[in-house]
Image (cartoon, rainbow, N blue to C red; front, side, top):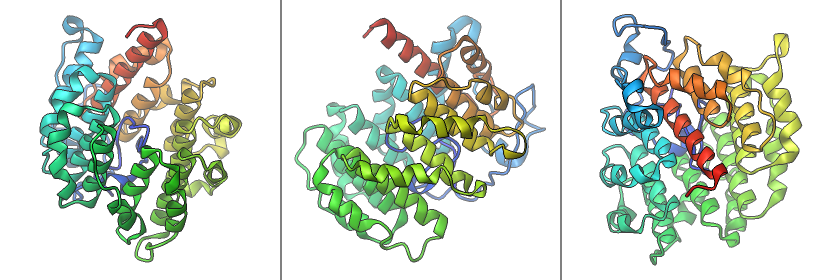
Length: 372
């Protein structure tokens, strides 16, 4: 299973929550780790945890009482950004999107990260926040060994007002390298030029003879999302239809949920509520229920906080990580309390996701008050 299968927060472009766009990240040489691990947040020791979980390193120590919740969250992310594990570094960058005053200093080093997935996320972050001071460090990455990083560099430099040739994105999109194809679609969607819609439409189903059917469907959904972002609302139907896929395609359903939340598709709310709320024999996998819940929160609907709260105490650390991300999108006292507890989880990935959730809630609260 892919090393970057669990990422915490979202770019608003490749948000991934436990069932993410594994093709969209580019994982580097870290795929040996097994992701069938279980962690126990209730006082588990490093000796009890299995080898794959221990490979992430020990939990990050913070003093909640002395530092406070938000500052503890920032400290977790700053430490995680220096981790030996690229999964933790990548998630730390995304979670710091909710603390932009810290993000820029972290990105300076991560733009030269040895892992192409981390570089991709770092470069995309420069573009999202238009960090023009970092543009000189991005410029050489137009010639990076990884096509995805080159695509991200085009995006970042364009957003920072630099002159850059976007034509390499077309060959990536129409090519047969899944990772590059997926990320080129993401970049085109974010650049906002509707003239790219015909190119995106040509890319659907093209150059994917060597990937699995599941991977091909994921890439096609990413292309559909990019077209919707550029104004072609017809592609919403393809994403909505995925909500009715067989339950065994839970990863695909969860991805569609994430997309509909990002695209602010209010018409999908009743179906999302059904997916989140099913119990008993019709209950869907945790990843689907939480993805649907988070999408509802992003739509401003009445998201059932009971769903992520249930999985916040799971023995499966991936479920706890996704619960933390989902709780961060829901503004209730119960979600805030649960996130505070997850900041001291035994698994550092869960801590990172909880830190991102804490920062997201704080940012949302400041925005609601009209603070800068």
